[in-house]
Image 1 (cartoon, rainbow, N blue to C red):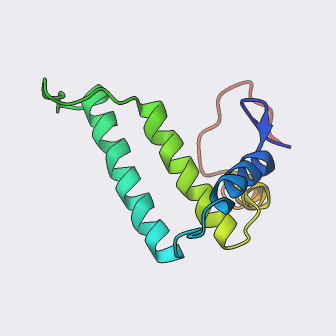
Image 2: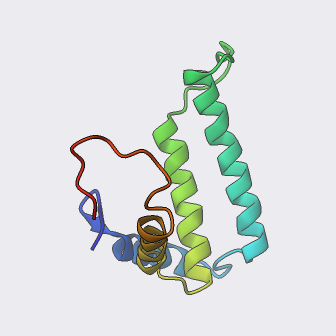
Length: 116
């Protein structure tokens, strides 16, 4: 079980589903959600560029945190997964297995790091 702020990924998926289920419109179409992901990723990129890049904010721009933009991305990812009946814990396990098998020798390990 994976916990985010005391909640499992399943809890997060259920919480988002409960929220979306209260509206007649329900989830947007998968294509619309991918467009939203792109939009939110652009907003995250802008914030990262303001904090770590060469483009400082204008004095007229409101302050937004990278954490907020990551939260927006997570929300849309959960919406997309829920709308497609995808269990994100299973998706995560699949990807981690791939990294731990196929890509296990791809990166230089830190010394004194035990291999799995």
